[in-house]
Image (cartoon, rainbow, N blue to C red; front, side, top):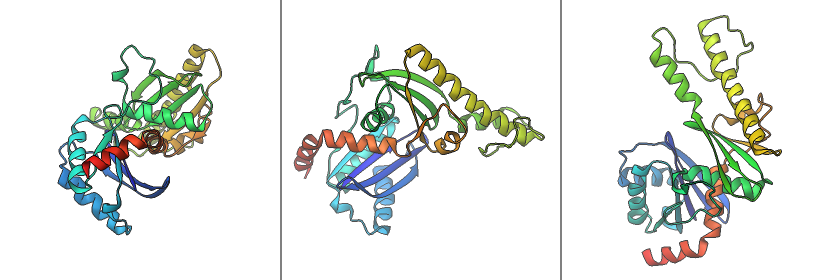
Length: 265
């Protein structure tokens, strides 16, 4: 089995695959202080609940935007799974051209999303990922990563509004029935939700205008389903783009990864 790990700023997702088929997926809050033993204890217990044996893990691949999490995850992989963990962007090169002045600046998750999107859609592409940050990533018609835009995630905006304004409550992300709010909560929901719709549509329009050609737009991330229904700029919903990208990168580097497995074992 392949253990794929996606470390985001808010959550860390673990997924197990056998022959390309997902056997299980689990989500833990990202904690920069979590130890290898804590990762292993939680993950092995979750696997056991699905009747999955951690000793059957044959390879481990990691995408991370949190550098502090990489070392304990490498240690967990080596000590509890007897496998070398391969980190995208460190042990494994990005499998597509990065057309940026400094390719090392781009987050691994953004490139991994691009890899999966290229497998499923015809470029040029705009990938909108609703995570801790809302990212807009461009893949050009040649299949190269060409940059993008980063905006605060909707959760960060809600939390900042609540913390900075004493009389404003913390609210859930919900599409209000009307744009004109008739209460404080209604006004906040309208400003947050429809404000983000405006942000998405405005940035997508500007990106397409700057690129100069029609582009396919894909939405992914936890809140993507909520916005796809109400945002005309988002053409496709793809729930597990990051995990699909990790799986594709594993397939492209399978010989290297399995050779590393034999050395570790």
